[in-house]
Image (spheres, one colour):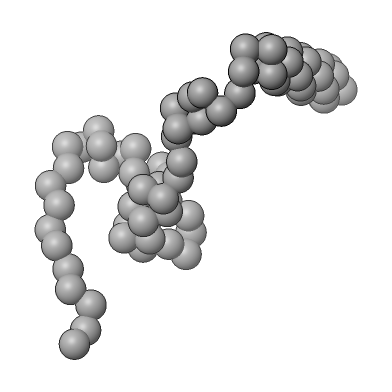
Length: 78
């Protein structure tokens, strides 16, 4: 028996969002399977205590600041 297919109806907006996430060699079925398999950050709720969560938040903020600084420096070099 071969692969079975199902039709799915999408709004134009939903289709465009899906299309924007599609990689060059992927089918739309591949995109849906990849995205459906992603984990949500909400699943991590309760994994870290408040101190650990605050430390992670600070580390991410520092990382973003460094990224923004690097991006600004690259822009200025142009």
